Length: 152
Image (cartoon, rainbow, N blue to C red; front, side, top):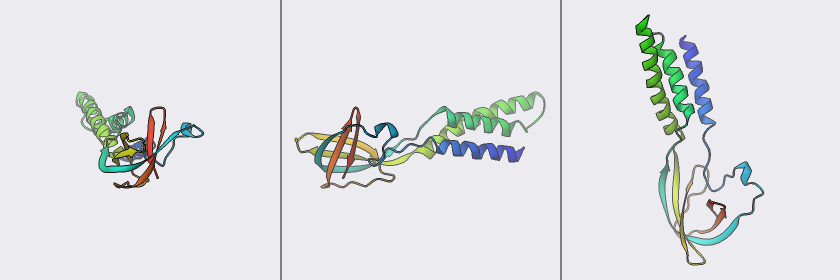
């Protein structure tokens, strides 16, 4: 039974890692390909490190509840076993939710840009695999719908 619990835990970890999306300025979703974007040029006034909070989906909570329930189902017997299973599922759900949020938390930057028009804007984006901007950098700001990104 212990090996089953470990196997379920590993499967859920792999599933959770597939939920992580990238919010850097150099990563595009498939739906963004071949879409017209407006381009404005500007200079970075400031770039402040920020933390992008992780996701809280039903997957982390559900995976934790399943693992916790299975693990706790080996405790006690009769009515005590049922109570342990329920408590294990609840505790596992809370732990799974917290684990998912921690695993999907990423480093970002709040980038303030003065555009050539004189307008000042601020964009927050992930920096996991993208560039780290600094004050004075000449950049492009790409916008499409409600989405914007800063690139060199």
